[in-house]
Length: 95
Image (tube, rainbow, N blue to C red; front, side):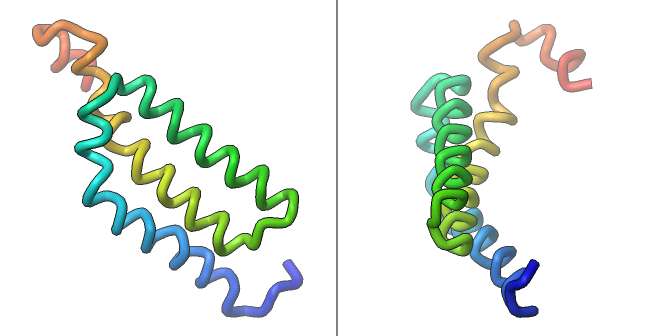
C-alpha cells in the first residue's frame, strides 16, 4: 500500500511477461507428465513464491515466479479431463 504508483502496474507486467514467455514451452512439459503431477508442481511453485515474498523476496521477482507457475498450470488444467474420463464422457464433463 505504501509503494509508489508505478508499482501496481509493474506487478502485472512482471506476472504477464513470464506467463506469456513460458506459455511457449509448458505445453510440452504438461504433456510429458500426468496432469495432476504438473498441477501439483505448479501450485508448489506458486505457493513457494508467495512464501518467499512474505520472508523478504522482492514482490516483482515473486510475481514473476507466480507467472511461471500459472503458465504451467493452464495446460494441465485444460488437459486433465482427458486423463480422468473415457472419451464418451468428455462432452458431458466439459458441459
